[in-house]
Length: 321
Image (tube, rainbow, N blue to C red; front, side, top):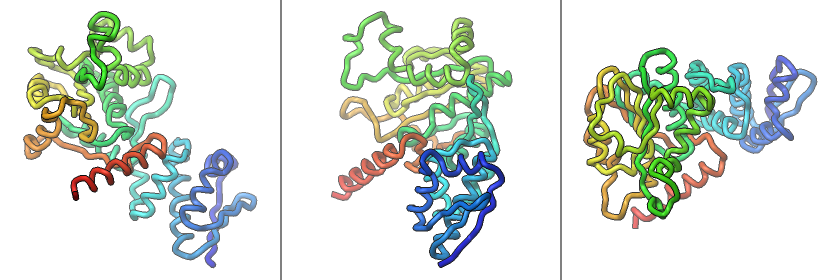
């Protein structure tokens, strides 16, 4: 039986580390088969030597997150434990160093996983970036954050957000309202991200001025988009022709981020996904980078990770058969 002691600096760290009803510490205890005992300003870890060392690294990582302003929850506790298991806990500090922007509610936007950090670096260093991965990995949200950052720094004069209005089991013709009202539900995730970054009032002001544009992909045809940060969301639902049309809208001093999940294609049977095609076609072109996310980068409820894993295993079994 091994024993290690950690000195906790203050009561707030104790509260944050343990979490509501000690849920964070319970995850550590069950994940590493150790016992965590608090005595005064100290934590004692009891268990097998190897398990205690891993738990120690995980708790050190969680304390570091709190020092960087992170509030601990089940998702980041599990992610830190994953990094410890992979021997990558030393990368945690670099990942939390950069703040993309501050939301309208004063919350800093930072990478929560190594995959997200790689994504942000790619957007900074390339003109066109493809972010490909499952739901809940922050592809759209972080792209919007980077767009707002560039806009506020006067690096671009316009933000353009677009996505294909692909019907998923419901016809546009049956929806009430005019064309804008019909397509607004498809663009709602983009509106939500902008509201969070700018606040409704600031968003409305820029929207009315035309410095922020949210529109269906069909509206992009025939345009040249200069001095803009352009985001194409749900790109797995574009056809190869639409993807080529969109990418060739790129103008001077502009940046494009394309996001999508190739496992959730809503195109009619027999139609190819433009996202799948373009990744292969442009993989060797300079100044274009593709970043792949996995279920480990999911920052939603734990069950989202489990759902993504289950579907991946099911797909593997189908392919093997």
